[in-house]
Image (cartoon, rainbow, N blue to C red; front, top):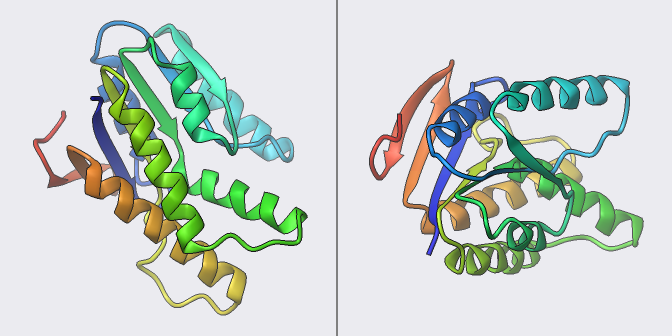
Length: 183
């Protein structure tokens, strides 16, 4: 059964760097599961910078925007898997559903998250999930944004419920919420 760590916080709070620093403190095979699609030049530059930060530490990378459970299964030989990030995964699922003329529900997300946890329960090592905490601001003014906030919140609750460690990042500083402090 994998040790699950959830790193959450706002945008640019230091989540990814904190997660990567911890992941690199674990010896063995490291796999980075990237959920961000390259949709424009600016996003491509962000992706390039993220890749550069992993080059010196021998990361394997799996780029998977929607089938997170399968990506985790592909990384089953890894000692540590870092998934960056769950909120982009939610975005991608919403986008795909929209292309099909459907709307993804909180129950759909709950089922997918439980599937991800089931895969983690069969993995050795450590799985680190990075996510954004998007529900701490004002209520969004449109239905799609409110749905996104709700889906991300449901996902975060389910993953945090199973996680051994939950850390909230604020201004680059970790605040331990659940379990022992990792670094």
